[in-house]
Length: 147
Length: 147
DNA sequence: CTCGGTGCAAATGCTTTGCAATGTC
DNA sequence: GACATTGCAAAGCATTTGCACCGAG
Image (cartoon, protein in one colour):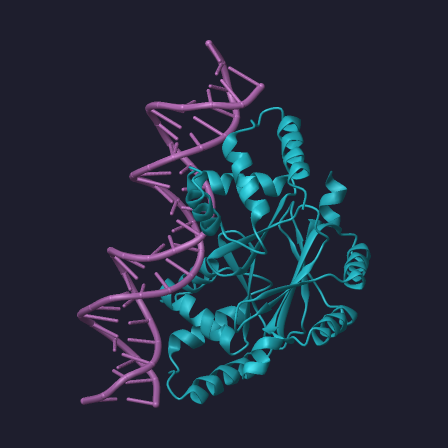
């Protein structure tokens, strides 16, 4: 993950809009996102920022996550009730998720055949796909061993 | 859609738990669900009940939708922020969704190859699937014509 | 008659918003 | 300087909960 390139993506996006400004907060939040491993939520990101001495408000975290989503640096998911999960999307291939209902683990996988099949379905229906999300809920190998 | 069979499914489920009771409200809500076409939300179902002269509270609607989900009569989805969508699941094949970002239309499709491919992915990872949801977001044929 | 279910309104938790202060351009 | 962005706390919204009453078993 190249932090410099991500910052440049954000910077270009901000300029492209002609209105949005490059603030310290936005870059600080981007850095925190890039530091993250796997999925995180807005709350967690906020506390991570605070405990690193970065002073931001939750509102700004939410706003900036939306902004980062717009420029493709972050993906947002809603696997369960009452909480959105995010992940950095910079330089990552298109992937899907296996979600363990026991331990809550999220396992990512990539499958070209699956993606191609999706495209087929779309062209059959004359539907122009923009993004897609496949979630498979079940029990992971770890939890199956346990029980 | 056979309303009698659905009611029987619910009845059996209630008895099987040994604790849950068969109330008028639960059957009234089930009926309203069976009457529905396509996707609906809790709020809409609630108002549909009220305007049909059935007196229930929102809390009961939510509780019952959860119950109907447990016994497989209803599926719940979360396509967008801040609102869950439900659909009757009784006697319906496993299907996925194309969601139009322009008009909000939800198009269902069935694809065996896709389902088989998903199973393959799971067994590769020793993951035991229970349910899955694929959403493809984009623009539908109708909206592409318009623009 | 017992205990699960219901209705209501208040509570919850995530997310957004209004407004004055701040910092970018 | 103009105006987008921030911070804070308060508001919003879908959903849940607490509790007194009701009704299924």
